[in-house]
Amino acid sequence: MVLTVSDVTKTLPQSGLERPILDRVSLHLEAGKSLALTGESGSGKSTLLHLVGALDGFDSGEIRVDGTSLSVLDDSGRAALRRSSISIVFQQFNLIPSLNVSANISLQAKLAKRYDPDWEDQLAQRLGLAQLLARYPEQLSGGQQQRVAIARSLAMRPKLLLADEPTGSLDEETGNAVLALMLDLVAESNTALFLVTHSPTIASALDRRLHLSTGGLT
Image 1 (tube, rainbow, N blue to C red):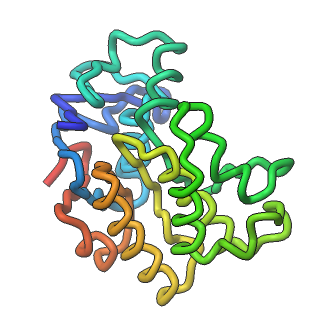
Image 2: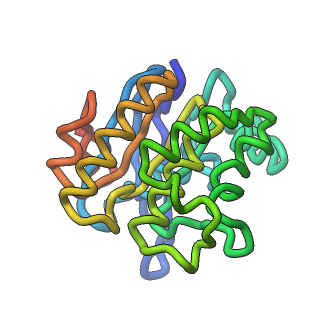
């Protein structure tokens, strides 16, 4: 099991009070499988993704990624786990402006000492980036930047891929094509995909779907 979330609770301040944004949430995800998390704005979808990605702490419960319990890790341990096992596709892309497309794609793979130029070439070809490798982020459209972010996330062959609205900046046709390709690549690399989306259509393309509401999952 790549991801196990067990009875996780997270509270956030609201109007001077602490309220549970996540209340004893549990889920699991296996290698090579995909899981969509849906829910209204403010329901805690991105909060849960950040917890799973070792970007934030939680109040109680347990999260295990690739057999490692996040609650026992300090900041450097969490950073090391993200470098070695977790990739995240954010809504904001988070590309490095001073690096060209090729260097942005390979950065995390090189940090994880898992750089494979043939795999990077394959990703660039299949995501329509082969002719853009020498360009810089400011020279790309939003959709092109999103595809670079997806290529970067897959280049290191992570154990767990987290994606927050990964096709949100793409038109419907391109978004559907990129999602299909993303699912193919995830299956080929035996990566577990945990995807946050507001779209029932996107969610239906994944292996499983969970809905987050009033702090709990259905």
